Length: 91
Image 1 (cartoon, rainbow, N blue to C red):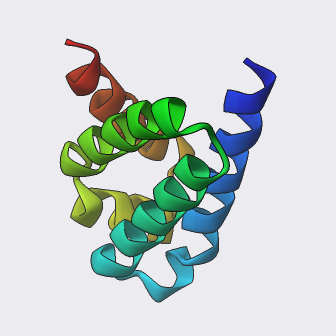
Image 2 (cartoon, rainbow, N blue to C red):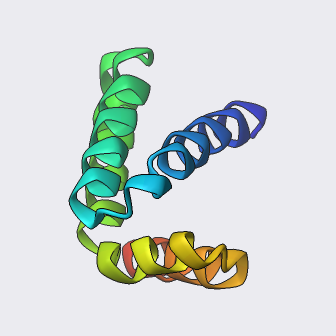
């Protein structure tokens, strides 16, 4: 659980750092890179599971809306978008 929270913090931090660019494609690429980095530090089996979960969340994230929310500093909207992507993958 601690590991997941730490990784989540890193991912959120990376995505937030690129918010100034305001570009949905940049946000998506940052998430892809964070996902790949996370998978590389795990065992092969765990890394594959992580990679699949990350890819699902990336596919289900509305990066245009996320970019706009980040520009506005709307933390509630950012959390909602991220939560919706996670829920879409939990099914």
